[in-house]
Amino acid sequence: MPEMVINGERKASVSGQTLEVINPATGEVFTTIPRGTAEDVNLAVKAARQALSGAWGQLTAVERGRLLLKLSQKILSCAEELAQLEAQDTGKAITTARNDIQVLARYFEFYAGGADKIHGETIPFLNEYAVQVIREPLGVTAHILPWNYPAQTFGRSVSAALAMGNAAVVKPAEDACLSIIRIAELALEVGFPAGALNVVTGLGEEVGASLSAHEDINFISFTGSGEVGALIQAAAAKNAVKCVLELGGKSAHVVFDDVNLAIAPKMIARGIIANTGQTCTAGSRVLIQRGIFDRFVALLAEEFKQAQVGSQEMDLSCGPVVNQAQFNRVNKYIEMGKAEGLKVAAEGTIHPDVSEKGFFVKPTLFVADKHDSQLLQDEIFGPVLVAVPFDTEEEGIQLANATQYGLMGAVWTENGGRQQRVARAMQAGQIYINGFGAGGGVELPFGGMKRSGHGREKGFVALEEMSTTKTIIHYYGKAD
Ligand code: NAD
Image (cartoon, rainbow, N blue to C red; front, side, top):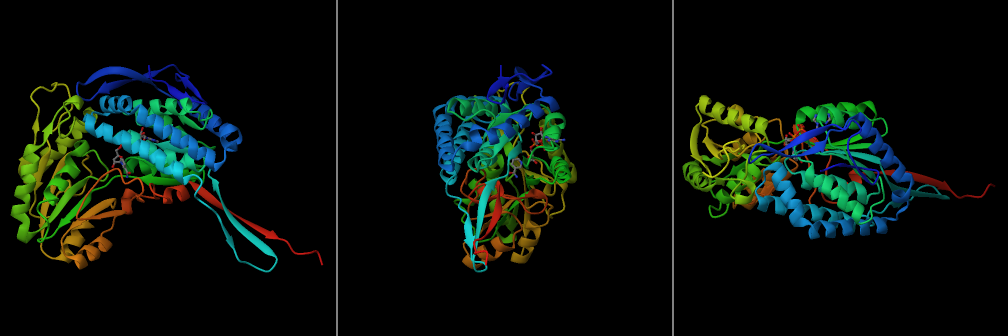
């Protein structure tokens, strides 16, 4: 039975209560997780605080790096077990889950290498003064995770926090706890000291709310919806702690007449169908220059028609969505699109052998005449793509920026000047030119603009986010 990991031990919740875990492909309960409360959060935060002044806090940066590397290797040696857990829990096609576990291991490998490579600086100042700027951990860091990429988002924020010497309390999403619990167990097996990494499972409004409002945390990394992100920022403000918010997106592809047709339609379709569209960075809008619009839509339609949806082990283009609420949400948007008069250009198929109780939705390609549909504003978080025509470069940029979000984007053109102009004018934290990829990119700074959040994870910049500077000013003159 999966349990929480607090202070180096596997634990049921203090209340003894549990939550059911449902397989999205069958709609059936297959295990339970502890339903933690504020009491469990208190224990975890206390354990993390003690770890900082105990064995974990005593480690040198080199030693921390070695532990992270050991965990990365352990994850790789248990990769299939972790991938199976992740797939069963979230509904991911098994190949997607396997890839996610490789990325998880890579995060720990990358930040293992970073642990001893963030150096301070010295600053020339007045005569007989030495000034050092040193980097210190923030302290107890809280990590509140979403269900769409549990292992990857865990790797992303927790490995960087641990590399910098912080202790971590992790609250995974209710629908996606199993891989996270197992990783915390593996961390203990490879020698992480008690309390360095704690996992408290439970409901967002219980565990998440009490963790983010806890008076003894020093930092929050939150990945999830904008609505909850606003609550997290308010809670962080109350205790004056820093937070990184990785929120939703409505990323646009801007496709010009001279696009390379051999690459773009495939990559764009994959970018919304993979993980059943439940990807913050999914390219869910495709803006296509009018001269090539019909031809490009026809090529995209071919990709959508070939998309097949099935259970995790069928390992088709994508699996079911994560739960009943998500199933209802995606279907609501598909119906809304039809009611608004958008044309369905193509749909994928659901494999005939799937369970009727599973949460399967058809990948759907819509065509709109104008950029005025609700489907072009809201994050649907499903395999739904809307194509819209535009005429000039200026209009393409203006439409790309015409949502509240700014997470990612892509420009597709062979014209070098245009590639640079459009990439620079698009308001998003990451822009691809003639390519598109969600996840991965462990080395590449990532994060949102506008309502997609603030702060950066991935790359070396995360090590700076998850630490602080201290300036030491030393006067070494003689008394006279
Ligand atoms: P969510 O906001 O519903 O939940 C995220 C986490 O917050 C969960 O662990 C949940 O239990 C917790 N939570 C819920 N209520 C809370 C509260 N009152 N206080 C504290 N914590 C609370 O999001 P979700 O549905 O799990 O994930 C989907 C969203 O995440 C999408 O919007 C997606 O775009 C976003 N996302 C963003 C990124 C990114 O890197 N920018 C990555 C993955 C997902």
